[in-house]
Amino acid sequence: MSTLIRGGTVVNATGAVAADVLVRGEKIAALVAPGFEVQADTVIDATGKYVIPGGIDGHTHMEMPFGGTSSADTFETGTVAAAWGGTTTIIDFAVQAKGTSLLSTLDKWHAKADGNCAVDYGFHMIVSDVNDSSLKEMESCIDAGVNTFKMFMAYPGVFYATDGEILRAMQKARETGATVMMHAENGIAIDQLVAQALANGRTDPVQHGLTRPPELEGEATSRAIALAKVTGSPLYIVHLSASHALDAVTKARDTGQNVFAETCPQYLFLSLEDLAKPDFEGAKYVASPPLRPKEHQTELWRGLRTNDLSLVSTDHCPFCFKDQKELGRGDFSKIPNGMPGVEHRMDLLHQGVVRGELSLERWVEISSTTPARMFGLYPRKGVIAPGADADVVVYDPSAEQTLSAATHHMNVDYSAYEGMELTGRVDTVLSRGAVVVDGSGFHGGAGHGKFLGRDLNQYLI
Image (cartoon, rainbow, N blue to C red; front, side):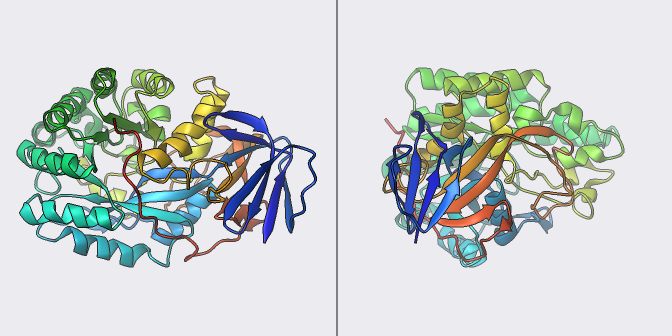
């Protein structure tokens, strides 16, 4: 079967051009000059719209166990929601429990995802138990297409790794070409601040932000960068939220070190004020790192423009307000950490274009092309070009919408962006050539998505 997407403006990271896009089977066959006659089984009218590569969300947590519960989206519901928002690839985290092997963890996550995803997917590996066996297993994970390994400087007793353990994992990454991803917050100090707040009767959700100050994110980021420099390992800072951490990343990149960082929409659009909402409403906004005072947003947008922040992922980890977030009533430290967002990333980032924070090309770059290159999927993904997978989004830049839990497709009972009015909306989504979303609804299904074994980070120098 063939599809012609006609009359639109094709936008890649390298520029925008008026062109028609011919799709044959699962691949893009050609870009065609406007007006050139091409026969196709199906024609999609993209007049007045952008034609962009499908979004790649490099940081999601579907069915993730946390604090006695699990994130509310399954791989099926989460990837359906992703498709509605123009994201055609996710990379989720397989979570090693202490005392278990990396390979058995990978098998467990394949059992959750395989046959259940509506769009293509890959995995990162969370390494919570550093020993000779797990370090050796990193090599087997790379052979299985998983070459990014996340570690934590936070959550003592659960995921926390010592500096020595981080150093050993980074040495293995340097040896193999893998990339270490880091949750950079000083968890030891944070735990003391949390205990002090609770002892003094400060139990509201806003305390989650006040006990995880940006200075402790900056300190941990600097320490991770130092360990990466000593070992020669690539380093990727996940969900960077604060100017303190961004300053450390910027300095490292200015020296040519292989240091990269992502931020998330919540840090660009939400703030500590949301965590402080009364009547426990602030619990909806509890994630780690926490939302910051608004002045950090300006610096994060600047970082995206200058490429000190390489891309934007969601850290999608939804917990329902009722029965899940409410576990922390009277004790903010028991509120499950995480927010929903996989459906809205492309639209929220488009607001950066509307507001003059980003160019059109940079929007595509940070939401699709850079993730494809960072995580070893380019040029199969992340570009509208012959030979690439036909993951294509027709995007209407003038459509208006209002975000709401009443209309979103994520399996969570609230929206972190309730009532936010946006300009721009996904019109049609193709995943490997199949129309999965259009004006008449969702046409995909569980099992369409394929597992993606990934090559190494293409930005390494």
